[in-house]
Amino acid sequence: MPQGTLEVLLVAAKGLENTDFLFNMDPYVILKCRTQEQRSSVASGKGTEPEWNESFVFTVSDGASDLTLKIMDSDVGTDDDFVGEARIDLEPLFVEGSLPPTVYNVVKDQEYCGEIKVGLTFTPEECVERGYQREENYGGWRESS
Image (spheres, rainbow, N blue to C red):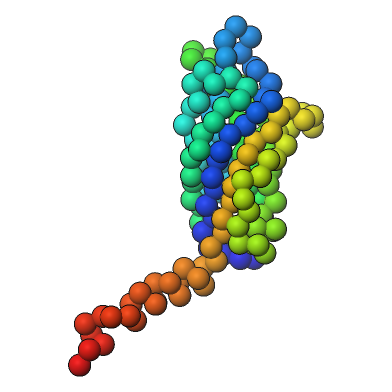
């Protein structure tokens, strides 16, 4: 299983089911990769077609095979409502290295309830380590004698 850095660009969602009956909902996303969890900002009043354009970075280690995006509606005074979720298989990303912003189905109770657009980039650990080594080997004062 690859190890490295996963960068997630959370772009937008559309066609979501509105969980607020009187107002536009205030959606946010909980991004989860294995045990790591991050949360987007709340797209206040954006309703069923929110935009975030936010980036998140995860450390990928053994056993990380998918990314879960759980869309929630922020509510004041009551528990936040579950809108739906998308699960993204990371295997194609490990092969390609990066995937441009792509639309994934959002599902709730095994039914389609909208889409979310996400871009993904994976940098293997070896490349990260090599990059640091290259920086250390070039033009350092220790090399000139």
